[in-house]
Length: 67
View 1 (tube, rainbow, N blue to C red):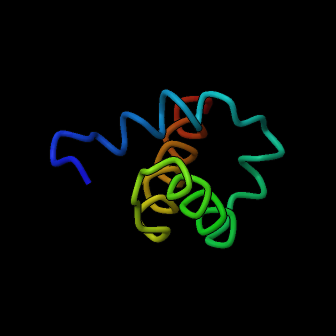
View 2 (cartoon, rainbow, N blue to C red):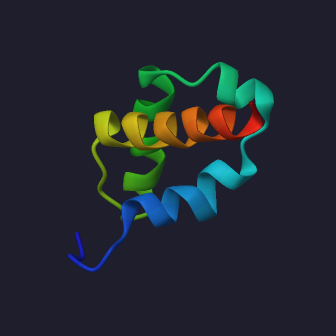
View 3 (cartoon, helix red, strand yellow):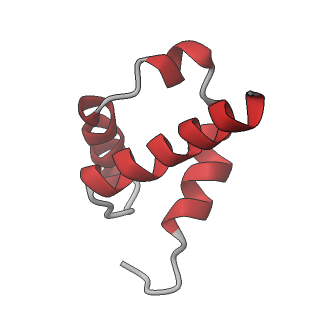
């Protein structure tokens, strides 16, 4: 994987911004694994646990900002 690749930025701009409330409510490690598998098919190698944690942080931040 390219060392200049910014996974959190990619996930925010290409994945998270397209997630609706149902997607966010149903976010799970299994969903992260599916996403990592899809990304691998596109040539992007990313750890499912890392994806899960990053998107989980985005979800938590949005919920905190909404309060």
